Each structure stands twice: as C-alpha cells, then as structure tokens.
Image 1 (cartoon, rainbow, N blue to C red):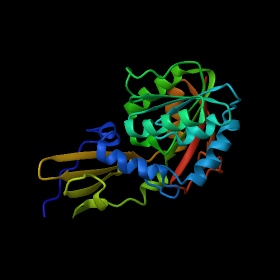
Image 2 (cartoon, helix red, strand yellow):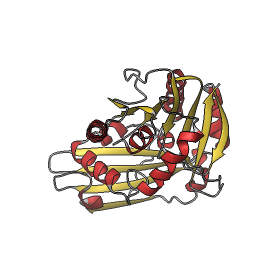
Image 3 (cartoon, rainbow, N blue to C red):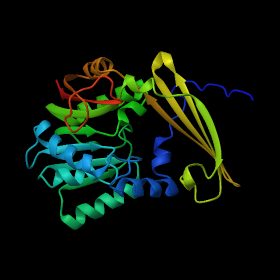
Image 4 (cartoon, rainbow, N blue to C red):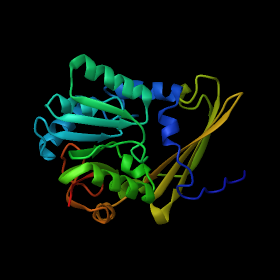
Length: 276
C-alpha cells in the first residue's frame, strides 16, 4: 500500500465551507441542539455552568457588551444575554445563525448576529466591547498567522482593559493522537452528504509542531470534496507569548471556560486575558 504524501502544515483551510455546507450544517445544528452531544458544542449542562461563570469572570454587568466569536446557534449568546449583557455574535454558519436569531427574537434578548468569518476584514466585529469569547477550542484549529490575525482583530474590537476568554487544545492531547486512515461507505453515518458516498478519514501528525491534521475526502457519484481539520496542541506559555505579541496580558490559566483549576495533563485549558 502506498503511504499518502504528508501535506504541508496549514496548506488548506476549509472551515467556512464545512460549517456553511447545506447538509453538514444541518447535522452540526442538530448536534449543537442535542444537550448531550459533544460533536459541535459541549454538553448543555457544561454550557450552563460556563455561561454563569464567565459573566462575573469577565467583569460583565447588565448593559455591558460581549463579542461572541464563532457563536454558532447562540448557546452562549442566549445565556449571557439573559443576564442583561448585550451580545454581538459572529459565525460563518448561516443555518446556526438563523436559529440564534429566532431564539433572540422570540425571547426579546439583546443579541445581534452577523454572518461572516472573524478572520475576514470584511466582517465587522465592532469596537468598544467589554469582553470577547472564543470557545470550543477554535483557537487551536487556526494557523499561527490566522491566530495573529484573529488576536489583532479582537484587540481592535475591545475597549482598553477589555477581557478575552478562550480555550485551547493542550500539548498533553498530542500524545494521545495516532496516525491512520479509514475508508467506509457513508463514513460517520451519512454526516457528510445527503447523496450516497464513500468517505476517507486520514490522520497525520507533525511532532515538531504538535500539530494534527484530520483530512476527510468525500466521493459521491458527482463530486469529490476534501475537508481539512487542523488542530495545534499548545502550551500556556505559547498562548501567552501570542497574546502578548498582540497587545494582551494573559493573567489566568484555567482548566476550562467554566473556571476549573488548570491541570497540565488535561487535553484542554483556558486562558483569561485582557487588552493591555
């Protein structure tokens, strides 16, 4: 068997196409709204605890403004807005945003939603926000250049002293990943297409970068599509350096975005920072 060529790190970025694909986005929204599913969001019991914790942790009061990056169907936006905080949510997934808008309209919540990538300068993130959040380890799926772009944009969107909370895939996670390849009809139970398809899932690792690539190739009778999912496993020191380079001060390392203590052996950690 021929070993596939190892792709160049961060050579392709397909997250917007994945999250806004008509079929995949329907699967993602169903997973978001399943209170026990960990596929697209964390279980809702954790989201409840996280939203309740982050409002005081970010120093938010009624009338303050929160920027929710990659807000999806508004699981955090809805909960934080119920505390009187005004939320601007940004996401590339049209279907998820439609759900978030419907909830905000139904319950008269102070939530504004914008369709677009938080990396795209054409997507207005606003300014003067009191805080920003980026949850579900989105930071780790970005390349170093993309992370620098994101942090620069968030810096510009926050008021001086505004806070940023994000969670990250940890260096400890890298040791648990193994390379491999699987091909199957209807890979992942029809997740990737409404049409019959064969799917291949390949996992590549890059030890020097603590980088993982999960590449999915989906072949129907009409098309072949490839989705790239990068995951860089980082340390608190590395994240702190990136934050400082962007004009932030990282002042707390936590176990998660619900305020758990940091555990160096855990697959994730969170960082609370402020705009210097």
